[in-house]
Length: 305
Image (cartoon, rainbow, N blue to C red; front, top):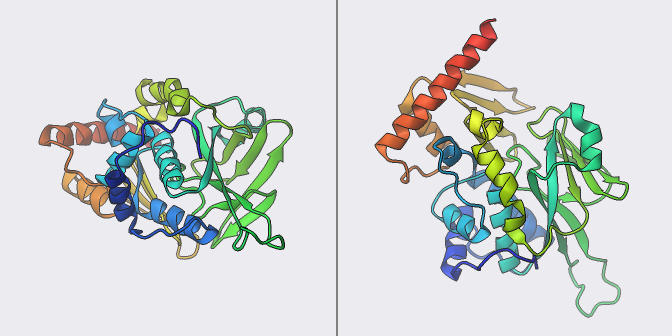
């Protein structure tokens, strides 16, 4: 089990989390179960930064995130993978947390060195069917599991070098000398992700607190500068950046449109991305829409020049 995943939530919090995923009877740990849990997580719990945009970023204690997800919220990598690791632990999976980093395609050298610590990555070991007491059974399998990229893989990737195709999307993994692993998905919002082989350590969420503070409060942070929500499904990715709603679908083609006003914005956030809005007061809604609209006008002005 993952060390330092925080004080365990009440079992009812995990039950609410599983209801949010639409999987109330997850069964014993298995590759099939792990795949189903990740697919449901990406479909039903959005990558979003509503609270950061409102200046009240939620903490990254996994127990808190478990409760928030059960109540209809989303988050970014430290929330999403932190809570998912806690859930998998709760269900009996062998989970390891890793310090990782997200890089642009031009930062490949830094990615190889593993300089950043702005991402929490997970690996999960799943025993092959028939392992227990069966000397002839296949060895356990290791998977790279990531519910915290927004537009990352729909299912876990076997932790082995080479390309991995899922539908119309292709990802790749390569082993890094001494440091860990490198994930590649060119053209996405996280084209390069590296993570260290060794576990994140016994500090748990506390080990990521300084980076969370920077990402959620610094004016240099993309999470502070711009609103974003992403949701992944089997065929593609829904993306809301500011007022621009996009659908990435390699088979049917990509689409993009600008949302007209706050009513459409909030209906989209709730309807397309599954983010419950009962925690937002009228003042919150006005403040968020004003911030999103100002950023949109700045973006439009930049495009005209």
